[in-house]
Each structure stands twice: as structure tokens, then as C-alpha cells.
Length: 335
Ligand code: HEC
Ligand code: HEC
Ligand code: HEC
Ligand code: HEC
Ligand code: HEC
Ligand code: HEC
Ligand code: HEC
Ligand code: HEC
Image (cartoon, rainbow, N blue to C red; front, side, top):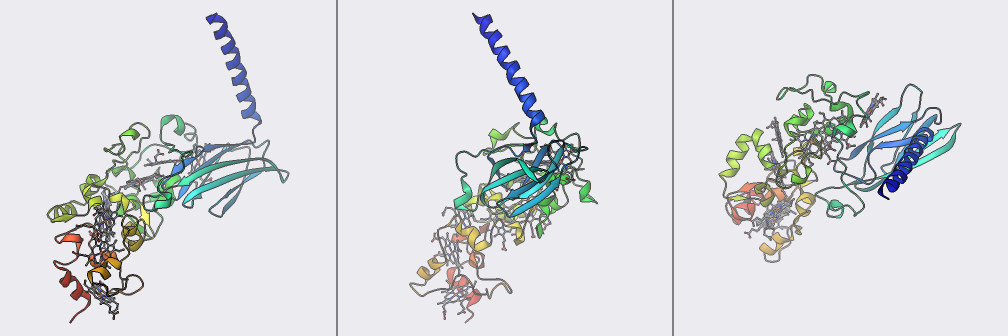
């Protein structure tokens, strides 16, 4: 009885195997990465397409980020790679394959760009899942053309960053205006050291390049002076105390100074339901301007939450920039 089932099952397996062989041979294109319903925290994703040059002349990648690119297929190459930009939330990426200018196959994949600082994009819909890439099995496909090893010398910046093995595939990560020193020098494994923290224990062995979460102690391992000064302060902002620096800072690069994930006003509001009218309350009803005026205490900068509050630590309650509320007022309203 058991033997018979085993026999049937192996027949079935052979059938499946030959079917998959058959479908692989006859499939014009196949998406190798990203996996279906992948979640990303970086605003681009590596798309790798395997294409059969006897069935496809070229294919077009189209995505919701308004990205379109035609890629020609030739018999010398099996895989084609492209970093496709993402917009917050759902992204549909379509690959349309052509021969003789007729579409022969269309495949689509969904990727969700999530962010810790946008309430509406913090929790991806249920069908999405994080797909970790850096495990031997998945890297094996790329080895034919890419060197996947770590080739950085700890603490020594690359003279030519394009020589970093990570750069080949991740170059867009450190391209924004304000770049964090270890990232723009391609010392990626100074943070992606394979360690996990109490919030990401589940990632152990899921990828080679984990970074501990909370990340605070790692940040302080380089920002030693900062750590000393901050720990001597009386009040510490909760997300700083708990080491969640990456709630506010990007570790790589950003269009905003100090590599912030959002402009300050919006950044603070992503956790605090406060708009500046709380100052008006302090003033017993007199309206205080919030946005859109210059900050007299910080030449060239706009009035913002950090005009009055410190982002990390302070020696006065409510993280104020001065010892007393009155002292704060006179910083800008000189009498
Ligand atoms: C057949 C050779 C080949 C294979 C196999 C291959 N790549 Fe590539 N890849 C390249 C080349 C060549 C480039 C440089 C850009 C170009 O010519 O497309 C590249 C560039 C890239 C880029 C950067 C694209 C951009 O927009 O700059 C990424 C990401 C990438 N590859 C990921 C992968 C991953 C992941 C795998 C394995 C799943 C893989 N590649 C397998 C040849 C290959
Ligand atoms: C052949 C291309 C390729 C190379 C080389 C490469 N990566 Fe990746 N990496 C990817 C792809 C593809 C992903 C999946 C996310 C994406 O598409 O951007 C990824 C994801 C990651 C992640 C997120 C965790 C994970 O495993 O999914 C980290 C961190 C990372 N890479 C770091 C590195 C570092 C550090 C290096 C250099 C030592 C490196 N990568 C080299 C293609 C590459
Ligand atoms: C200062 C520490 C630090 C450095 C240096 C650093 N990273 Fe990261 N990286 C992080 C943290 C922290 C995260 C987790 C995402 C977050 O919280 O923003 C992350 C996330 C990532 C991700 C995953 C994004 C996703 O989709 O979730 C990739 C890919 C990545 N890093 C690649 C790199 C590469 C490539 C380099 C080198 C140029 C690099 N990192 C350098 C700290 C760092
Ligand atoms: C491998 C060492 C290293 C690690 C780890 C590191 N940094 Fe840095 N960081 C630097 C260096 C070097 C600079 C540039 C010199 C400076 O301004 O202090 C810098 C600069 C900064 C700046 C800008 C400072 C300024 O005044 O312009 C911020 C913000 C920052 N890092 C935040 C972080 C955060 C957040 C983390 C943890 C996710 C972190 N760093 C982890 C080395 C590191
Ligand atoms: C609540 C958001 C938030 C968190 C959490 C946060 N930062 Fe910052 N960080 C900021 C803002 C905003 C600035 C710009 C400050 C300014 O312009 O006065 C900044 C500036 C910095 C600077 C440069 C200026 C300075 O004060 O030295 C460093 C270094 C820095 N942060 C490191 C860190 C580290 C390390 C952590 C985690 C232990 C962290 N930050 C957590 C918001 C944050
Ligand atoms: C990641 C979420 C998060 C972000 C972003 C954030 N905060 Fe906070 N903040 C908290 C938490 C949690 C507390 C402690 C609980 C509470 O009082 O709400 C706190 C407390 C405070 C307090 C009260 C401290 C006290 O002593 O009563 C002030 C003031 C404050 N934050 C200002 C800011 C400013 C300014 C920014 C932007 C630079 C900011 N926060 C961004 C989470 C955040
Ligand atoms: C013009 C100065 C000023 C600006 C701008 C400002 N605050 Fe305040 N904030 C204050 C003062 C003053 C207090 C009350 C201190 C007290 O009464 O002890 C306060 C109190 C707070 C508190 C703690 C008390 C409470 O109501 O929960 C938080 C949190 C806070 N502010 C967050 C923010 C955020 C977020 C922003 C930007 C969206 C901001 N503040 C902008 C001056 C300011
Ligand atoms: C970071 C700078 C800053 C701080 C701190 C600050 N203000 Fe202001 N305040 C302004 C600016 C800018 C305006 C609008 C321009 C103006 O009228 O000077 C303003 C306007 C006002 C106004 C309305 C004046 C009018 O004619 O519209 C009052 C009242 C006021 N502030 C009171 C206070 C009090 C009380 C405090 C302390 C709790 C305070 N401000 C703290 C920057 C600040």
C-alpha cells in the first residue's frame, strides 16, 4: 500500500519535474528577483529578469514610479538587471516581452515601499512579506556575473567606490544629496555586521547582512563623544533612549540634512499629534505662528519643532532648548 503510493508520488514528481523543465525552456521571460509581494524600505528595488533570446527580442519594464525602460535581449546573456525606483505604498512592476514587435508574454510583480515615518505606509497589507535576498541559494544565480563577496577593509574608505562589490547592485543607496560617511565610503559591513538585536532576532540567518535593531549602540560605537554628552543630560527623548535612531535618520543618504527621513516638522508629527498650537495654549490663547516663518534664532532656517525643542536630549523638561519657558521666548523675542 505504502509502496504503491510512493510509486504514484514519484511518477507524479517526474511529471512535475518534466513539466517544469518544459515550462522553463518555453518561457520567454521569468522574474528572478524581487519575490512576489516583496516589502522594501529603500526607494528602489533590484529587478532581475531571465530571458530566452530565441523567444524574445526585447522587453520593457514599466512601473508605477513612472519608470519605463526597454532592454534588448541577446544570445550571449541570460540575465538582465535593473534598479527600478519605487513610490511609497503599492508598486506594480510590469515586464512586457516582445518578438517581432508583438507582445509574447507579460508578467507583473508587486512591491510595497514601507516607511517608519508615514503612518499610512507603516503597515503593508497582509499579502506582502519581507523577502531576504542574501542567502547562498539566491546569490548562486548571480555569481556567474557578479562578485558577491565582501571586499571592504574595515575602516578604510574605498578610493574608487565603484570597486566595492556592494556598489554594483546598490549604487543608488548613497546617491542622495546628504550622504552618511560610512555609507558614501561604502563601508557597508561596518553596520551590516550580521548581528541582530532584541527587535530583529527573527532575522538571524535570514540574511548575511543584518544590522542590529535597536541600532543605537552601533551608532554610538562611532559617535562616542555624542554618547558621552547625551548620557550626561537629564532628559532623553524616548526613541533616542531606546536606540531607535533609524526612526528619524536614514543610515545611508537623504535629500534632507542630517539624513533625516522627513523634513523636521513632518518627522516630529509622525509620532506626535501636535501642530504647534500647543504653544498657543501655553500663551493662554494668543496665536503663535507655526509653519512658514523664519526662525530668528537660527539664521536661514525656518521655524520648526527643533527651533524650540532638542531632538535628542535636554536639561529641561519637554526637551526645551533653554532652561525655562521664558528663556525660550526671549531667544526669538528680544525685549
Ligand atoms: C548574465 C550576467 C548576469 C547575471 C547572471 C546577473 N547579473 Fe546583475 N548585472 C549584470 C551586468 C552586466 C550589470 C551591469 C548593468 C548592465 O549591463 O545591465 C548588472 C547590474 C546589476 C544591478 C544594477 C542595475 C542597475 O540599474 O544599475 C543589479 C541590482 C543586479 N545586477 C542584480 C543582480 C542579481 C540580484 C542577480 C542574481 C539574481 C544578477 N544581477 C545576475 C549581469 C548579470
Ligand atoms: C548581485 C547584486 C548584489 C550584490 C553584489 C549585493 N547585493 Fe545586497 N541585495 C541585492 C538584492 C537584489 C537585494 C534585495 C533588495 C533589493 O532588490 O534591493 C539585496 C538586499 C540587501 C540587503 C537587505 C537584506 C537582504 O538580504 O535582503 C542588504 C542589507 C544588502 N543587500 C547589503 C549588501 C551588501 C553589504 C553588499 C556587499 C557586500 C551587497 N548587498 C551586495 C543585490 C546585491
Ligand atoms: C550607519 C549604519 C549603516 C551603514 C553604514 C549602512 N547601512 Fe544599510 N541599513 C542600516 C539600517 C539601520 C537599515 C534598516 C533600515 C532602516 O531602519 O532605515 C539598513 C537597511 C539596508 C537595506 C535594506 C533596505 C530595505 O529594503 O529594508 C539595504 C539594501 C542596505 N541597508 C544596504 C546598505 C549598503 C549597500 C550599504 C553600504 C553602502 C549600507 N547599507 C550601509 C544601517 C546601515
Ligand atoms: C562606522 C562608523 C559610524 C557609524 C556606525 C555611524 N556613524 Fe554617523 N557618522 C560617521 C562619520 C565618520 C560621520 C562624519 C563625521 C561627523 O560629522 O561626525 C558621521 C556623521 C553622522 C551624522 C551627521 C553629523 C553632522 O554633524 O553632520 C549623523 C546625523 C549621523 N552620523 C548619524 C548616525 C546614526 C543615526 C548612526 C546609526 C544608525 C550612525 N551615525 C552610525 C560614522 C559613523
Ligand atoms: C526623534 C527623531 C530623532 C531620533 C530618534 C534621533 N535623531 Fe539624531 N537628529 C534628529 C534631528 C531633527 C537632527 C537635526 C538637529 C538639529 O538640526 O539641531 C539630528 C541630528 C543628529 C546628529 C548631528 C547633530 C548633533 O546633534 O550632533 C547626530 C550625530 C545624530 N542626530 C545622531 C543620532 C543618534 C546616534 C541617534 C540614536 C541614538 C539619533 N540621532 C536619534 C532627529 C533624531
Ligand atoms: C518615533 C516616534 C517619535 C518621533 C519621530 C518623535 N518623537 Fe517625541 N516622543 C516620542 C515618545 C514615545 C515620547 C515619550 C512619550 C510621550 O511623551 O509622548 C516623546 C516625547 C517627546 C517630548 C516630551 C518630552 C517630555 O519631557 O515630556 C517632546 C517635547 C518631544 N517628544 C518632541 C519631539 C520632537 C521635537 C520631535 C521631532 C524632532 C519628535 N518628538 C519626534 C516619540 C517620537
Ligand atoms: C515656538 C516654540 C515651539 C515650537 C515651534 C514647538 N514647540 Fe513644542 N513646546 C513648546 C513649549 C513652550 C512647550 C511647553 C513647555 C511647558 O509648558 O513646560 C512645548 C511642549 C511640547 C511637548 C510636551 C507637552 C505636550 O503638550 O505633550 C511636545 C510633545 C511638543 N512640544 C512637541 C512639539 C512638536 C512635535 C513640534 C513641531 C510640530 C513643536 N513642539 C513645536 C514650544 C514649542
Ligand atoms: C524659535 C523662535 C521663537 C520662539 C522660541 C518663540 N517665538 Fe514667538 N514668534 C516667533 C516668530 C518668528 C513669530 C512671528 C514673527 C513675529 O511676529 O515676530 C512669533 C510670534 C509670536 C507672537 C505673536 C506676535 C504677533 O504679532 O503675531 C506671540 C504672542 C509670541 N510669538 C509669543 C511667544 C512666546 C510667549 C514664546 C515663549 C513661549 C515664544 N513666542 C517663543 C518665533 C518664536
